[in-house]
Image 1 (cartoon, rainbow, N blue to C red):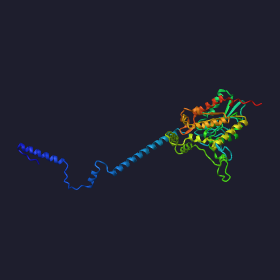
Image 2 (image 1 turned 30 degrees about the horizontal axis):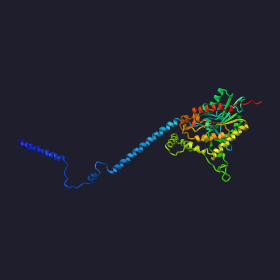
Image 3 (image 1 turned 120 degrees about the vertical axis):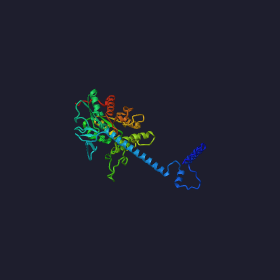
Image 4 (image 1 turned 180 degrees about the horizontal axis):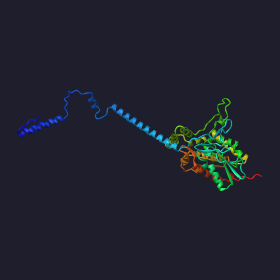
Length: 415
C-alpha cells in the first residue's frame, strides 16, 4: 500500500521506501549461520555447474555405444557394397566338370573328350582328342611343324576365352607369317597340373602326337608335391612318404591358399586379403607373401624343387630319344611388376638351372614389367592372365622362336 503525502518531501520519502523494498526482494537472502543445509545442496556445491559422476559414466558409455554401432553399420555397408562390386566382376560359376578322374593312373585328372561346359568362368570345349582347342588329327599332317604346349592353368587359359589365349594367338601369328611353313600348336595344358603330371601326360599322350617341339610352360607352383606321386609307407600304408626325404612335405603358397579359402565365404575379403598383406609389408609388418614363399621354396634341398627338376630333365631326355626339341617358358607371379617384384631371386635360380642343363629358356617377366599386374587378371580375385596378359605372352614366345630358329625347323620329309 502506498501512503500519499501532500508535501514534496513526503513524496520523496515514499519513493525511497519503494526503492528499498524492490532491492530487498531481488537480493539473495543473507545467511545467519543457523540454517540447516540439505544433502542435495551439499552435492551441488561439491560439483558446481557439472554433471554428477554416475551421469558422466552413463553419458560416456552411451557415446561409446553410438560409436560402435555407427562403425559396425559403416563396416556392414562397406562389406555388402564391396561384395556386390567384386561379385559383379567375378567370372560365372562352372556348369559342370570337364575332367575325368582316374584311379590307379597318373595323372589322375585328364580332360574329358567332347566336354563343353562353363569352366573357370568361360565357355570351354574339349576337342575329340582330349585337350582345349580346335580339332586336330592324331597323325601329324605332312609338311607340318607341330608344337606341344605342356603346363597348368596358365597354359590351359583359365578364365580366358580360347581365341585369346597365347597358344591360339601364337599359332595364328606363326601361320600368318609363314616363316616355318604350316604350324600346329596343340595345347595340352590342364589346370592344377604340376611337373610330375606334365611329364606323365607327355609320356602317356603327348609322344603319340609326334611333336617337333615341346614347350613346358612353367609356373612357380609347379613344385607343389602331389601325394599320388609319393610311395606309401610299408609300415603305414595310409601314410605317404618320399623315398629320398622319408617324409611328406607339402609346399603350398599360404597367401594363395588364404585367398582361395576366403572366396568360399566372401569374395570381398578374398579381394582385400592380398592387398592388405601388401600394404602391411610396405609398413614393415612381417606378413606372408607369395614372393617370399617361393623365394625359399626353390632352395636346392627342397624336395618339391628336386622332383620338379628331375621331371624337367626327363622331358629333355625324351626329346633326344623321340627327336623333338624342348624348351622352358617361365611365367612370372602376376603381381607387383615393379623393381620390388617379390620373386626375382627365384627367376635367377630357374634361369641358372636351365643354363646348366642346356635347356632353351624364356623368362616372360621382362615383358610384363611396368604394367599394373591387376589389370592383367581375369577377375578382381583371380590372378590368371586375361586377354592382354596372353597377348603379351604370345608376342614374347613368338620373338623367342624367331631368335632361336633351331627350335622350329620344318620337319624333314620321310622317304
